[in-house]
Image 1 (spheres, helix red, strand yellow):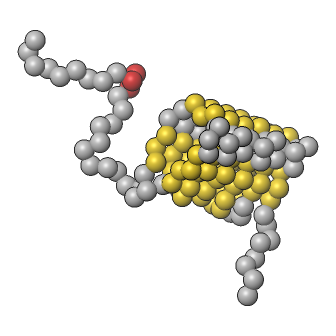
Image 2 (cartoon, rainbow, N blue to C red):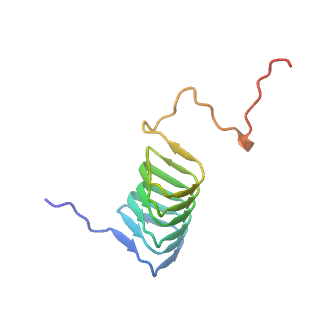
Image 3 (cartoon, rainbow, N blue to C red):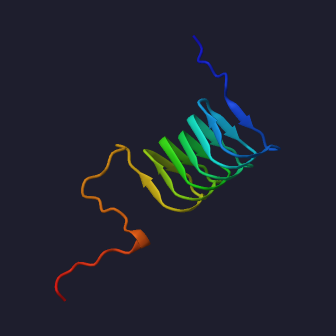
Length: 133
């Protein structure tokens, strides 16, 4: 039996959407979105897409411009034309040559905490050892 592809949503290049987008099936974005995108499936951000907002998705492929944070349960793929200003977090990450990425990344294939890994300190300062000097 063929897989059901019904329900895949496309936000075309001439569309502008403001607000939260929530979907259980895949989304392809080629237009402009200002707001959060939550998707239980896969998201494709096309070359012409401009997005201001955060993502919470299963996996994502970015070819366009994103100004926001991306959290993916599985995979983030940044194509060579991608411009990303924001932090990313996922189990897997693929980055092509030519990507513009300004932010922090957390890639952890196991998905769990890594023992002995120091936590970031507020303000970005590393605590100094107290050795009496």
